[in-house]
Image (cartoon, rainbow, N blue to C red; front, side):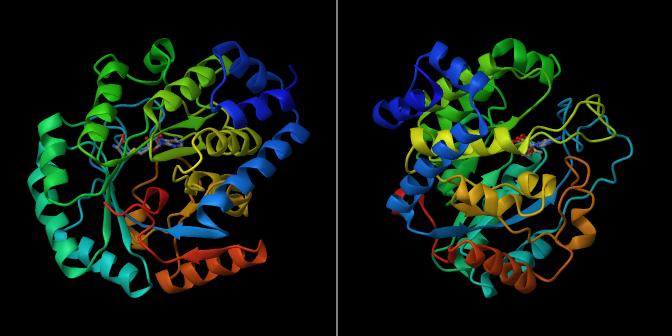
Length: 350
Ligand code: SAM
């Protein structure tokens, strides 16, 4: 079967075999990619209209106990200026987002485990009481089932935890020995079990990635049925062991966004900051490929510069209102607009 036949099959059956994924991912052309994007766009519109959900991300701490080889905030990066925003400042950032119509707050940080836990439960409760019916998404890394449970009970709605790769050997090439894929996957299943709208995901073009490892990612995502999928290009950071690897490609990122949309029809799919950092207009290209979420950064500009996961990260140097206005314009140029609702999976309120 040729690539178009495989894309048609994916649309009908919602999955492919391992070998079919490998054929598709190793031999698609630009025309095939656009064929997939056409289908993905129609599917996104069927479920969400020509609307894009808006989330405000607060990168509240860059302190991390992990040492992922690709990441600019890894613990061995001695050049990093560490920060941990106060609760007050986090709430102030969210207020600015709220005043600009944003109803989902994404709190992301490096892995500080238990240190973050108690303050996070308090913060979630504060957000929920100050900003009526807002949604809270967390992206704090790997915790135990009971810790996730505490966060869920405090009111958190969603959790993003990219699995990074579903292939064990590839996982080993991206991470030090004290991290393991089985635990990461276990975390994702725990989050699902606790009723979080759960997001997994990968970096496209991460070092040592192959069509075979990507095929495993697609099969894993099909079995997990995540409510969100984060897919953005790997971009090197100069102070990491992967400084000299090339960035992932825009084309592959767009193709994977489209294939995810076709496979997991209703999933919430961000057009990522990394895609926007790699190419001007990258986020609107992502929307046209089937993405339906954009996450403007609410972190203060002078703090954001220390949350450099990769070089040349798009930074929000303008006030939130201007950033939202500029993104709205970009969207309207392609016939889309922001949806200022909570933006739950499939319209579901949790
Ligand atoms: N500590 C949490 C975790 O691991 O899920 C959240 C923070 S972590 C920095 C968020 C994501 O950034 C990672 O899942 C990874 O995919 C992405 N990331 C890290 N380094 C990157 C790079 N060099 N290029 C693109 N994305 C990167």
